[in-house]
Image (cartoon, rainbow, N blue to C red; front, side, top):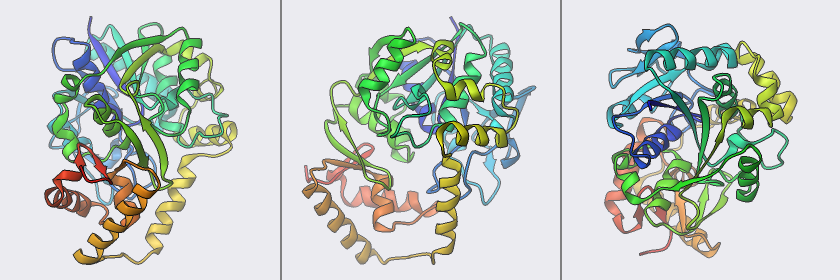
Length: 367
């Protein structure tokens, strides 16, 4: 069987797809199709990037674009995908959402043909892909649901794998499991440290919070994790590295949001549908945040001031009962550099305090 993967939310889910491929012990390197939708910490432009935002894509067929280590985002856009293409032992394909779900479905069908895939697994870390669209805690449904709706169009060859249910901090873990069971799915396996090793180098630089927490949990991290600018709390347990799967079509059919998105033909329609069904769209939130960052004068705290802020944040987080924070959370709270400067800051911090680094999380309690 030849399995192709579709990373529902972007680069972090692409890394998780590589881990799942390793866990399934399928021979050969995986083919992973993914959206290019990075956080504002990496890409200052709101929303996903399409083919027009890159140079150096390798077009191998109609609608099938391979991202290579030579691919580059066109400034001011940023993207983690070219470096992922260099570091992951995988063929990375770019999914362009600007022709809506119809366009995504055509891209996936074309890739299935080109790579002679007999099965497609949509990979989502956290489980927001199971959302109906009306859940009170839901914050970022667009990427996951358009990928689900596109994969569902492929029919019975497509399934969904949820890794680390609850790691997004949006939907409760029991609710995610209930949605999977309702769609006729269930438990598949639990990730181990060996499954993480093939992708371990990626976590030395990749900013994904959910995929990073998944990898850390597979390697034994347990406790309370704080993520995102809102400070969402996630509990890492023995169940966190579990993988559950369900048929894509059944999961999509049980989601009013996925059903409503199925006939969209451009990204403006996608936004309108998400706003109508959910009452909001994360695009509006990203635009507002990007505008706020643009109005704010760049802050460049000195090394001593930054070290002081980190120490204060760690102390306060520990008093809140937190064991770990994501490095994205830490960076946003202390005013660390954004964009190209983020990686240099991150690397220097780890060199100075290796005792606090539990790849790829940051311990607020000395070990």
